[in-house]
Image 1 (cartoon, rainbow, N blue to C red):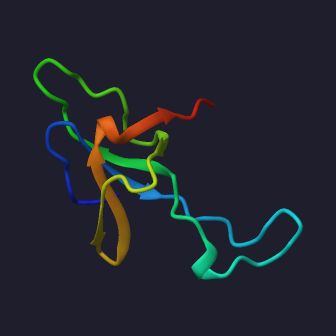
Image 2: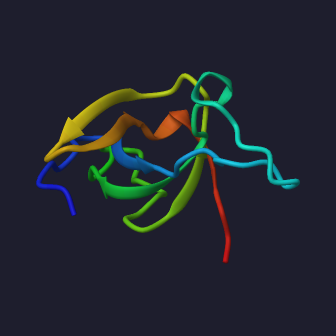
Length: 92
């Protein structure tokens, strides 16, 4: 859990690392790995006055490849972005 509480409609996300191997077992070099598009919501702001937040802590979400700003907190890498940059929430 992070000590950072996002403000307004911002969300703090812990990216889920990209796959290290293909389905057939081929190791993917760092240069060829895609930037993660999936992550877990670590913290969320309270939303805006007329727009309450729809994501909550613990949700696994899908976001744009170049969304958010990368930050480091206590040695871990997170993304902070507006809720509008999140495309959807994985169910189940």
